[in-house]
Length: 169
Ligand code: S3P
Image (cartoon, rainbow, N blue to C red; front, side, top):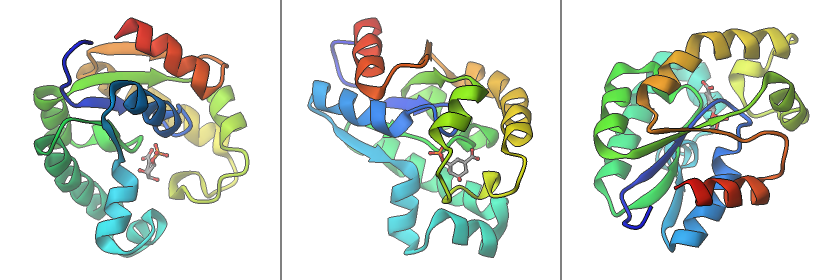
């Protein structure tokens, strides 16, 4: 990738969207923005509280608004939340205004990387594996639908994955 459109990372929780995105942004001399952190900054509340108060539908609406603004602003590397692709309007925005990379990760790797996470409302219950498998089944076609490139993050760390992805762009 020689010029600098918005580079948008989609994919499930634990795929490395933030850690890989930050490294890619450094390489390209672009800003890095994590859409979840931007939603939290705007609302003054953590994602889990937004889910509690407004439900998932309310969160998706905020997510769409934030992504629309980010895609209109200066070129950046943008990490989206794992469920951003559920919203048809968001999918349209991503397809139209970004170069979209789907970061793929296995459920085993997700479980490993998210083992100590307590911030994500969708995996707050007991059977994380079943939830992650279900989400993957539902969402894989949607990631494929918006992505210009599919990239398997494998089992390596973020630095190596960012290097490999940089070579593909
Ligand atoms: C979600 C993923 C989270 C966050 C929210 C919902 C999802 O983002 O947006 O908890 O629906 O998969 P990450 O993918 O950055 O964990």
